[in-house]
Amino acid sequence: MPGKKTIITTGLMVLLLLGCATQHKVEVAPVEIKPIHITIDVNIRVDRALDDFFGDIDKAAEKASEKTDGK
Image 1: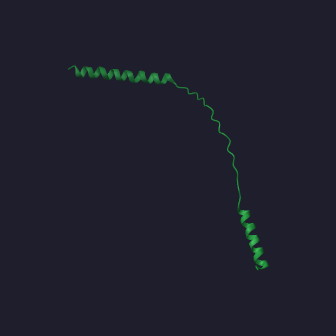
Image 2: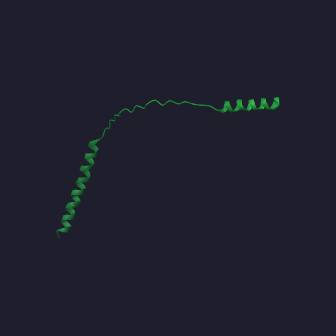
Image 3: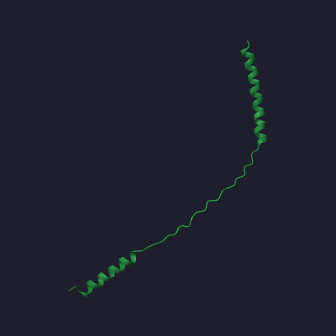
């Protein structure tokens, strides 16, 4: 027959192990994805001015290459 000390020790060990056994329940709600509206302002004037500037340089380069090719 087990002694009183062994029964108490076994009982305390069982309580200790039951105290360590935890259970968590996590609920995840559905995620709603909404559309995003983005407004972008583009400075077209600067872009066109740069095209005109570099376009003039390209035209001058073409004329110069035509003159050198025509010799």
